[in-house]
Amino acid sequence: MVESTNNDQMRRIKDQIHDYMSFSPFLSSIMDTEEFQRLRYIKQLGTSYMVWPGASHNRFEHCLGVAHLARSMVEHLQKQQPELNITERDVNCVQIAGLCHDLGHGPWSHVWDGLFIPTVAPNKTWRHEDASKMMFRSLLQNNGITSLSEKDVKFILALIDGDPKQCSEDEKPFLFDIVANKRNGLDVDKFDYIARDTYMIGESNKLSLMRLIQSARVIDKQICYDIKDVNQLHEICYTRFKLHKTIYNHKTALAVEYMIVDALVAAEPYLKIADQVEDPEKFLFLTDDIMHEVRRSTAPELAVSRAIFGRIPRRDLYKAVAQRIVEWKDYEHFEQYITKERIVQEARRLAVEEGTKIDLADLTDDSVIVAHSEMHYGMKEHNPLNFVKFYSKRNPNVCAPAEEFDYSMLMPKIFIEVKMTIFTKHPQYFGLVQAGYRAVLNSMSEPAIEVEPPSTPPRQPRGLSRGSVNESSFGQVPIDYVPTTPSRNLKRAHDSNSLGPDEEERGPKRQA
Image (tube, rainbow, N blue to C red):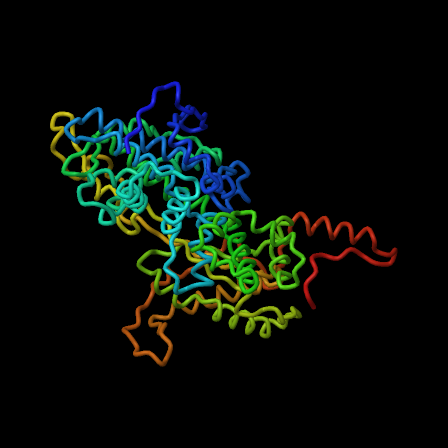
């Protein structure tokens, strides 16, 4: 495919991040399809919008931004290094891959493939990249787009997956570093979403994306950067970590995620949602609107789902009773030991010992969630910059990894940590579940802990230092504590106005 257009034929779109972006008539024909327009109805940050009202942007504008940056980078390489023999066909295919790389995201973005699908179909190997490729083929077929050869299509699909093995061997390997870089994770997809997400939540954005693109140079068949820009790349990696730590894994956003998953799981036997991910005609209508479809329904089979979804706009959410950061080296140990079953067992024991009058009927294993959120610089425990090569202006054709002294001696020695959050689905158990969790955590301070069930061969038990299991005193509440929300306070105020003259207003009600 070769497309040459003059400036009068280009569509120009104003964007908050990149100002005006230009798209050819062929790119516009892809954009003006149901498959692509579907992305207008999928929030880029999923449930983070429930916490940051500014985070209302969708996958639609993100994909436009990635397409814009993809074309900018490949055209820069084409102009600066004509010896690479980058063709117009290469430029167009890379931009199309950037435009269509997220066609397969399900409702609320990563809630779908990160939580819902693994819950209802644990043996399914489905990924949103697989759905993107499915939807791209469907887009071409349903809209009569025939100007792409099968070789072009395979090339674009391989670019979306970042896997050159999926297409012809004669494709240029460095082009796979642009949209989905499997080598170090530094690609225009990350450039756009980090800049866009930062801006939309109201934070200042100091990243100079065009400087990084103009710094790019192909050496040894991979994209390298000027060593002067190593700090900009480090800022990209750090900002990714910061977004995961403060925005993407915020306790309220996580609470809404788990409520959505519970509602969808309850609806699954009736709606058969998971079966729709492999049918492009049905996947077309899987968007964030599924919540409203369930709430509008009067089917008795969806009563449980409606009840859960109905709690979200009232902010009657699952409550985070505790959060802590876990070292990566201890993650497996915490995951095996801090379980919802242990927490509920300890909570019930403490309720009896303390002589509380809390009704424990709804305090089941399913009423507690133990969530683990990995937060890293982009390559789990590794420093992504160790997998990037740099050049200098004095030696523009020689590349090498940067050393720590090239950019900072204050680099962290650890590039990943895990945030563990304990939720209760029933607010009346807030204090009790927190006490149960603290009791389980305290038992980890024993010098030797056997975490495997008795039926498995024991392995060498490993002790944890007292410091690694101490729990912060911040946020600790009494065992009978029940949190309130503005809507609950309003309801209590309304109820109190209806009390008789001999009745007195009471505090937060618990089940007795």
